[in-house]
Image (tube, rainbow, N blue to C red):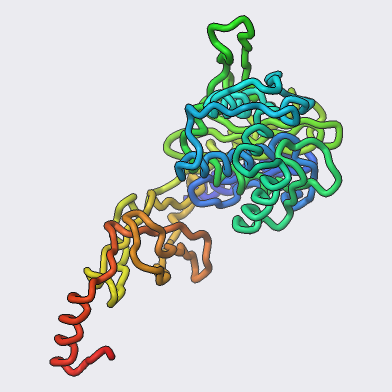
Length: 380
């Protein structure tokens, strides 16, 4: 028993010492588990810094939302403006008047960090980059990002354009919910303008895609002000980690410290599913609906993060349902599952309706009121 206790003590001591030495060259950094958002490691995580092209993760969230809402199609051809074509820095050398599909523009953003591509899509979605940036900042508020303000959609250095390692991790966590994006960010090389005399070779700026097991994204960044930055995500054994390093001195150090940080997370932690996706966790009730109530289910697996070798965590959860205007579509978010440990909230996730909730028609309401009247519970 004494040997076991000594082993556990040494394990915890060494792991803590190892954690303190992670990302030592970065100005700020963080490592989180994606499904819960729980923090594994952090350093100056709220410090406001230039995020460089990691900015494009927020741009990509808005682009993906437009596609998923049907306002933008993957095969739609976008006409490139002179403004978009004039963007400096990383680019895919778009020409004014050229047409390129949304698919190829997103590919250019994810793989080559193309400033011209992101501005072209910003103009298509909002009419101008300025209006698109307004949407980016509104989204930042919705995600409760307290140390983020955008001035452009690209990440080029500009006064008042900043974010933090923690906020970048939260943006990345939101982005990976759009799983299609990982198909692009995990591709190491590809081509644009196939079968033309302007064929363009794309190579992913995130070299860890090729060398780190389980890596499938997400976004590199560099400017003179920001230095070398990286938000990376990888998955192993049903656990996805998201790491951010900012202000690294060179790309080699950036990649090494990111790899070490992810190794630390994968070696010492694991996730356990406490509620399976699709489990009924409550009911949505509305006396003006045709069904009166419908089942509320989890949108995804509900996980908790555990440190290997430690005691099993005692997690409880509450369901908070919020009334919505009828009708409600199947899969619409109607509340939150709030996970607690020792009475304290540790994270929350959306819960959704299992089926459509339709508004009751006049006849249904009349018959229902007659029944209530007979039972002494008249609604009027």
